[in-house]
Length: 415
Ligand code: LLP
Image 1 (cartoon, rainbow, N blue to C red):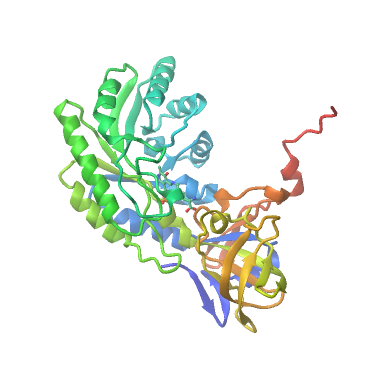
Image 2: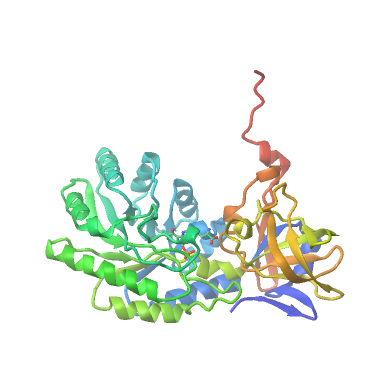
């Protein structure tokens, strides 16, 4: 379910006409639907309600404070990968005992910040990281709760840039070396082993790779039990895919049923780190058509959003649907939809049939995940604003950046 629909040719988010927003707010901007966010979170979380679990929303997919606060109020924990993400979750008063810290390159400062904040656990990705956590915990005279992120070497069958559970990826530790590492961790005074973790990739459209990974981790859990290492948590990461175009991903219920069936005999608290499946289809990016131009080969629709605002099409050749904000008096053309950035790779769509009109506005769909969070200031472009719609009200949850913001941290040094 999502809440972006047409009435009389006009695109709405819940009960707000997007044309009302374009009248009031400078494009480009992101728009999120509160009721879709809430519904997606609840559907996911409720699919696991009959087992012990914590849903830890993956902050990297959308880290706006209002969005994090919405999920916190719905009972969510958080999956973080940096001190900055930890800072954001604490700003919305998240329960630290529902925060898991993932990532291959946690710095000593970040580890200290997380230990100080009493998070639920560190998902440790190397022996050296473990030693570093132990030393910092010693300094703070605390026990650091850890799980190892193991790399189960299963193919998630997704884009190579977002597959993480294969041997050639930098993530996790080799599952065949895990028992040895757990033993070493057990001997460290300031480490408390609490769990095991794996995350095999993102935008998965089948359940099978998740189940393969779980089966491999279950064997490892058995081996650990045999040497007296008993765990509390099994974190299987995020990764459930969404429909951008023709994909047919499993529903959260199908995903949950398959997982529950596989873990029912384990008696562990399951942790999930969903990002995309909760937020992707709850957001759009709204952009204004600036110019049309054509050459002998192609038509171009030049819009005011660039790869700095939404990089997924340029970076992953990702398909995101583009629809008009007002269908009335539009013409259908086949064109590349391109931004103002000085790079040939700056596009939102290639050879796409779209409905356009002069001075019209377009909405790029499925932009709620990895949209704003991957935006940048490339070409000295202020980052866009973010709007939340709830029923018939809208709220600016991040102001568009100004030129002053662009240079706020810079100094002119005469040399
Ligand atoms: N947990 C860990 C450890 C992760 O690395 C990720 C995503 C997630 C959870 C959340 O995964 P999700 O449920 O959203 O699939 N920028 C790319 C996606 C990168 C995903 C990185 N890790 C994109 O725009 O497609």
